[in-house]
Structure formats: C-alpha cells, structure tokens
Image (tube, rainbow, N blue to C red; front, top):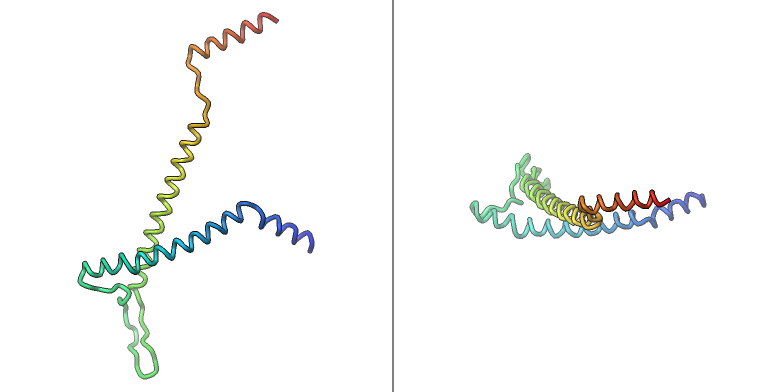
Length: 135
C-alpha cells in the first residue's frame, strides 16, 4: 500500500499532470465565456436578423402539456447553439495551436547555428589538414 501511495504521489507531482489540470480549469472557464458569447450575443443577433427569432425556443413537440404532465419536446434550437459553441471553440483552439507552432518554428530557427560559407568550410578543411600534417 505504501508503494502504491508513493507512486501516486510521484504521478501527481509531475509537471505534466499539473499542466493538464491547469489546462482543464482554463478550458472550463473559456467554455463558459464562449457559451455566454453565443447565447447572449451571437444567437440573439442572428435571431434578430432573420426575423426576431430566439433559437432556444426552437423545439419539436412530441406531446403537449396536459394537466400535471409537462410538455415532451425535442429542443433542437439549444442543439444549434451548442454546434455554434463548438465551432467557435474549435476555431480558437486551432488559432492557438497554429500560433504556438509558429513560435516554436521561430525558436528552432534561432537555435540553429549559422551555416558557414563555402569559403569558411574550405579554410577549415585546410586548417585541419595542416594540423594533421604537423603531427
């Protein structure tokens, strides 16, 4: 049991697990922001442009409410909003990954040592040959 706990402690204290936890927390917060953007800004604007329609009200009623029984309906308007949420989040994640890849490429290019010119390479070879002949 002690070995199991020490392995678990090592697993949790790794940087990748902490990074993953931070990513999930930030992702959740970002999802809330995008959901708010879609529900309170984008969808009302689209609804206004196509005739003052609220997408959240779009539904297909399977059984109307009667007495104490509530209405049974498929709310496809909310599904449309979730699709728009997904598209926005996917676009932002794609943009972030693209930006990170560009920064990584620039960093790799900066790290490469400069390639000597052919003249410098030739002079280096001559120097090395002269060193070998001296021995």
